[in-house]
Length: 184
Length: 87
Image (cartoon, rainbow over all chains, first blue to last red):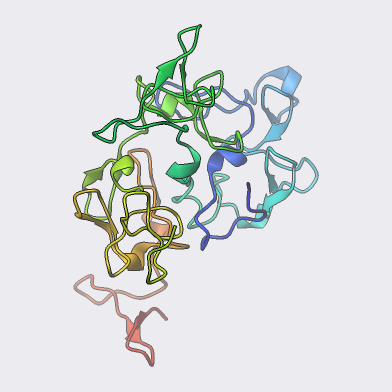
């Protein structure tokens, strides 16, 4: 589910695993807690009162190490963070990993290979097991964040397109591609 | 599913890697129209990199430790295998 601590080779690290419960702006940027709020005693706190650093990453209050939001285990040493509180390379760049097979709903497909996405009685898009999906077939939670089969958030709803598609993906040549065209 | 040669295949008989991506005979990730999307050498754990509009990085974090010549080119050495290395 989460690799603890993360390794670059597996390409499984996702920043959603270390971000506190915090709001985001319209571009999907995390808005850290208010340092000037007298109730916060000079600390960055998330909505649950857990301490984060200036980037919104959950930290162990004693050591300052970055911890995950699943079980609180250490993900990065404090000494590995840069002066802006960012995690070390390559995780500072490759921090949106997911596998599309684990984020797609379970569908039947038509003759053209398009998934048959139905609606439930409340008008929500669902897969054939009744799990909520976006109109583009990605698994979502009640607040429209994209999740995987383990209910782990992979993209915030603010990072998804209005119709629930993934943000644009590019290859190393800068060419945009649709990940559903690349999966078996 | 596997074919008679032991290669992983999808329900349509197309070759896939262990992470479920369509691949060609060389292991490069391709799309449904056989256009190459990622070279095999760019995969890790047979997974593709996720490059998004909000993927940002500080170039200083990706540079090796080397000096520059007067023209601004990096001065690099090569290891025993011919790979470029910093100091």
